[in-house]
Each structure stands twice: as structure tokens, then as C-alpha cells.
Amino acid sequence: MENFVKTDANGNRTLLTKDDADAILEGVYGNCTIFSDCVKPIQKIRKKKNLSDQDKKNIISKCIFLYLVAIEASYNVFRNVVPESEISCLLTYAVSEFKRVATDPNWIATGELDIPNVSPLAVCSTILKHPVACALAFESEFFHALGTLVKATKGRDNLLPAEDISQSVVLMVVKSFGVATSSANYKFRWHAEKVFKKFESSGILEQFLRCLTLEEDRLDFILLLKQL
Image 1 (cartoon, helix red, strand yellow):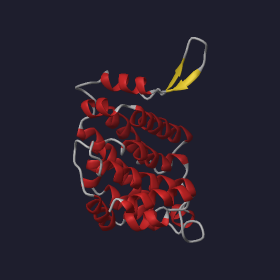
Image 2 (cartoon, one colour):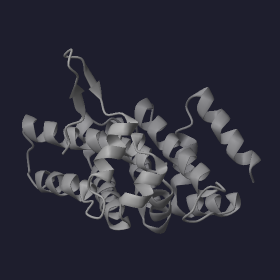
Image 3 (spheres, helix red, strand yellow):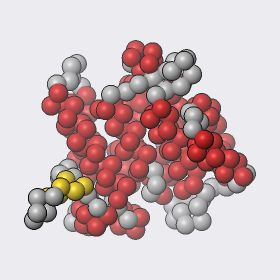
Image 4 (spheres, one colour):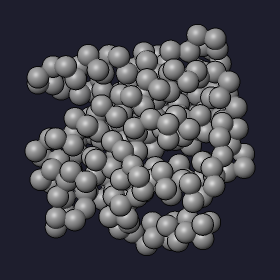
């Protein structure tokens, strides 16, 4: 299922496209277990005390597959095919990973993560573009767990996580804000002030501000403020 590389007749290799992602989802219409089929094996791997190189490759492979499906799938196909229970499965897994990593001494000291540990962040940064996923994230402890993760690290110069992680956090917050306040959001629509209050109460707003390291990130934040 998580074969995300195609090879054409000429031997050229390409990643999944929008049409590929939609076809994968439409092929499991009425019986979509794509997310749980990837998450459950990862959770089993994570129970091991020490991960082998193959374990790490398996985690990365499954997360890349979910990342591509989430980012490439069209909104309508995703909404019509993927049940809320599958999205909740992914978000619950992400929350458990955020909590686990938040207590890791290396993360606390450096603010850096290897690819298997950063993969859940990457998947979440794409799935939150879908309204139902965004709604479920707000209804769960997702943003609180994300805020706790960022808060735990002393990071670079005792201030920030690694730049790629800071950018992922900024992306998730900005994207979630846009989806939550969009008039096209079929699941729910909140006023900008309500979204900010939710971010503030979860602790992610403070950590989001810590992660504003790039000029384009600051511009995104200014655009958010203008909507209040």
C-alpha cells in the first residue's frame, strides 16, 4: 500500500501525484483503513527498546506515503473517502509521539530530531489542510501536545528548536488558522478571535511565536493579526 514511487515505461521514477492519491483513496471507498494500516505497524515498532535500521526505514516509508496522500489528494475525494476514525487514529498517534519525544534528553538539549522522529510532524503539516482533520485537531489535545513538545526543548541558544522543526510548527499553526476560518470549511468555521483563544489556551501560540525565525514566517503572522 505504501509504495509511493512509480516507474514509467522508460524507467523514470516519480512520486505520487494528485491523480495517484485520488485513485488510491477512491480504490478503498467504503473501506478506507489507509491511516490505521500505517499507524498500527509504527506503534508496534515503537514498543521496541532499540530500533534497527530496518525499523527506522519502515517508519519513514509509511510516513512518506501518508504525507504524499494527504498533500496530493483533492479535498473532495479526501472528505468523501477518509472516515473521521482514520484521521483520529493518525492524530492520536501524533499526540503520543509528541509526548514521547518531549521527554527525550537529546530533544530537550538540542531541539533536533532524526528523520523517524520528525516524520509525524511532516505528516501532520500536510493533513491539516483538510477541514475535517483540522476540526478534529482542534477538538483533541493535538495542539496542546505540540506546544508541550516545543516548550520542552532548550534548542539552539536556549531559544529555538532546529530550523526545519520551527518551520513545521509555524506551518501547522498558520495552515490550521486559515482552514478553521475559511468560508469554504464545511466542517466548522470559527471567527479568528476564537481560533487565537484556542491556540493560546493550548499553549501552542506562545511556542509558535518562539518559532517565528524567518521573515516570511513573520509576514504570515502579520496576516493572521490583520484578520482579528
